[in-house]
Image (cartoon, rainbow, N blue to C red; front, side, top):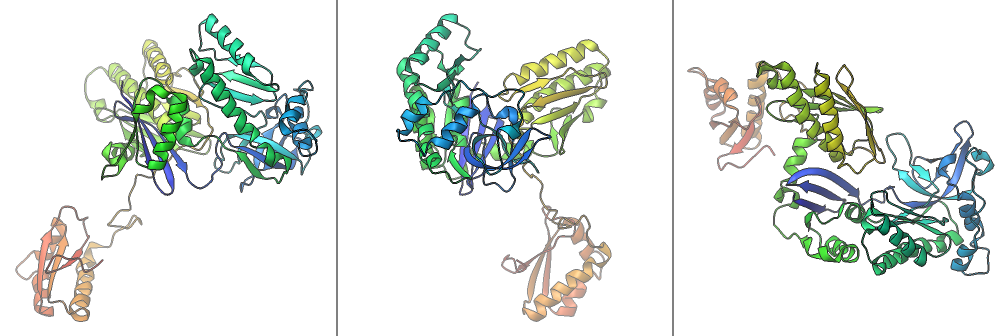
Length: 517
C-alpha cells in the first residue's frame, strides 16, 4: 500500500493530507494564529472553584476559561505544586532543586479540589482537549512530553512499556536500558516504536525531551500567569511522530522552511527514511496536483456518495454526529432485498470509517444502517466495522447493531471536528433561495441596456445568456431583441451559453470584454 503525506503551506495555515493508494484518508489543518492546541503546557491562574463538580476553572489566556477536574490533577500534583512555589526561592540550581523534590506525598483519590486549589493560585497544566463549541480547553496537571520512542513524565519514577511490544526479552531490555539512563524524578512510557532501537537513539531522545521541560523552568521561577511554558511539536511533526513507519512512500512539501524542518526531524527519528521527504516545486497548487482538492470537495459535503447510487447523509449536532445510510437507486436493482441491504451496508462501513478519520469526528456517532433481518449479516457488519476501525489512532468503542439497524460509536474527542464548506452561492438567487420573476426579466434587461447605450455610449452590445432565455428574447417576428434595436438604435447580439444559469445575463462589448464587472 502506497502511503503519501502531502503538506500544503500557506500564509494562514498548514494543511496535511494523508493518502493511502492515492485516496484521502486524513486531513489536518494547523492554524498559524497561536491557537490553543492539544499538548501545549501553560502556567495558568485558578479563576474559581466549583465544589459541586469537584473541579476548577483556570485562566490560560483563552477567551473561555479552561476546565480541570480533581482527578486530572494527578497523583504527584503536590510535588509539582511544591516545585512551582519554591523554584524561584531556593539557592540551589534549578536542576539540583528538581532532583531533591520528594514524590512520596501523593494526592488522595477521594479528595476535594477546594482543599488543594484556591482562587488566584498559579498552576501548571497541559491541554488534553481543545476548546470545542462553548466549552473551554480540558486540562491535566499530569504533564507528559511525547517523543517518537517514549513519553517523558516529570515527577514520576516509573517506567511503563507499551503492551503492543510482545517479546518479554525486548521488554526487559528496554526497561533495564531506560532505568540506567533515567535521571531522578522522571518517569517514562516506552512506545511501540522503541522496539529494537539502540541505546544511543533512546538516550538522545530522552535528553531532548528533558531539555524541553528544563527550558521552561526560567518562566516558572518568575511566574506571570497566564503564559505558555512550551508547546508540542508542530502538527506536522506530531503527525510524523505518530504515523511514520516503513510503509510511508513519500512526503511532499511545498514550503522550503517546513521541508527543512521535516527533513531534520526525520533525520533524528528515522534516518533511513530521509530520502522520502521531497520539496514540491510544481506550478499548480500542490493539493490540485495530487488530486486532494477534488477529493476534499467530494468528501466533506452533507451527502457523500458511496457506490452504484448509494450514499451517506452526515449531520453534525452539538451532542452527537448522525450518519444515515441510503441505498438510493440500488434499492431498485435485484430481487434479494436482504442481500442488497447487506452489500450497501458493507460499502457504507468502508466510507464511514474513512469519514470518521477524515473529519476527525469525536464524541457519540450514531449510524443508521439499512435494516437487515438476518442476525448473521448484522454480526458480519459489526465485525467488519471493528476491523476497519483498527487503523484509527483515536480511542474508540463500537457497540453491536440494534434490531432497528442503529450502531453507536464513541470516538475520542480532543479537538473540534473538521468541517469544510463545499457549497457555493447560487448565481441565480445569490443565496436568498428566490429568483426574480420571469415576467419582468425583459424589463430588467431593457433598463440595463438603456444605461449602457445612453450613459456609456455603447452602440454594439453582446448579451451572453442561457439557451432558454435566448429563445425567449428572440421568439416571434417582432422579438424583444428587434424592438430594442429599433428603439435604442444599436446593434444587439444575443449568444447562448450553457454555463449561464437560467436568468443570468453577462454583458459584453463588441470585443467580447465584460462591461458589467
